[in-house]
Image (cartoon, rainbow, N blue to C red; front, side, top):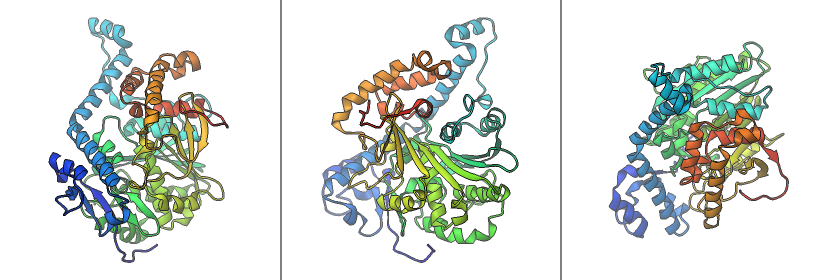
Amino acid sequence: MGANSYNVRFLIVKPENGGTWDLVRLLLVRGGDKDSSGSKFLEYSCHVLEEDDDGGEDHRWVIFVSILVRKILKVFEKPMEWTGYFLEFLLNLFSLNGCFLGLLYNILHEEIARPDFMDKSGQLGMGHRALMDLCMMSSKLAYENENVVRDVVNHHWKSVFVETDYQKESSTQVFILCDKPKDANLILISFRGTEPFDAGDWITDFDYSWYEIPELGKVHMGFLEALGLGNRGNVSTFHEQLFVKREKSVDSEDVDATIAHPEQPPERTAYYAVRSKLKSLLKEHKNARFVVTGHSLGGALAILFPTVLVMHEEVTVMQRLSGVYTYGQPRIGNRQLGRYMEAHLEHPVPKYFRVVYNNDLVPRLPYDDKTFLYKHFGNCMYYNSLYIEQEVHEEPNRNFFGLRFVLPIYLNAGWEFIRSFIMGYIYGSEYNESWESVLFRMIGLFLPGISAHSPVDYVNSVRLGRKRSVQMSSF
């Protein structure tokens, strides 16, 4: 697939381009000119809406919801960020001082231990872990800062931390590790996911904008931006990054792509930095194979990364791919994209595994129907709240808002909240849930789809999950 000229097709939803009255008109007013329809929120190539709209009413409704949610998130962006900092500090304060009584005792004795976010640690787990477990823990670890990741990988997992790439503008963070310093057998790439209190990440998840790549299909524009493969402010940059930049970079692949700093040239994007480092490591470790993983938004980037490798005809690199493991991953494109990638990831053996926990909202985004056109692909490993696994094509209640699922979803959230207090008694002390997790489950009593997105349940699903071959309920 080359950089030949083609008819660019895209659709961009821009919540900032209108106010409350424009949003109301978008939902209520049919037909007419651009202003009367409220479509000033939309920027698109010729005939996109006419081709994709099967009736108009549903199309406007889902765009309305997307804009409304993103506007609300934008308003609460700073409060969410401050809340996240406060809760993280508070929960670490209690943890370091032995809960409330311990904190009170230390305050009275002037021995209070203050949280140091640079000194967090984590553990891979007990004994040998399967690749799926390693990928889940790596996806969870990707939320931490570089010092924490380096410490955990080098000292707890006894592996070798390679580097972190950080793309500031789109908050993209990814780390790479090898299982040993010489003659490594495994190279792991882990993308960071949606931060619970990062409004920008949630705005990306609720985005409807797409960009069509010839022969590949329609791809979520926000995820392309997160990999540094274009900018919706100038749509032509997608073509430049996906095709022109690819051709220009062929002769410079040996350049080491370390941590991306603001003063570096803008073309040093996450995708090209990671690809360059991966090719360097594969060259250094002749027998190594690589896996890509991520939770939430990180899962979307984890599957999009090899998708672009395939598009760039990186045949030698893709031959050494062992697998892609994603957890709570949103949809990244349309059915054409899925068919294109299944041809490269299903043979001779399946290499793409998408893990979904119960009522997690994020895998149900963006909307999947005749209007929203986003479709999942690959092997879905679905776990209910009893951590029973079933291999399915699509998770139940694929768009989350089915009326018959409302009561079971809230009842299940209540059960998960109660379960958080007894996990240690049922499965052992290593499964005791933190106060942060309990608080998150309390939020789930009101927003169950959000609390079910916690990495804790994905870790438990992978470790405690057991298969059931018969049809099961979503409870």
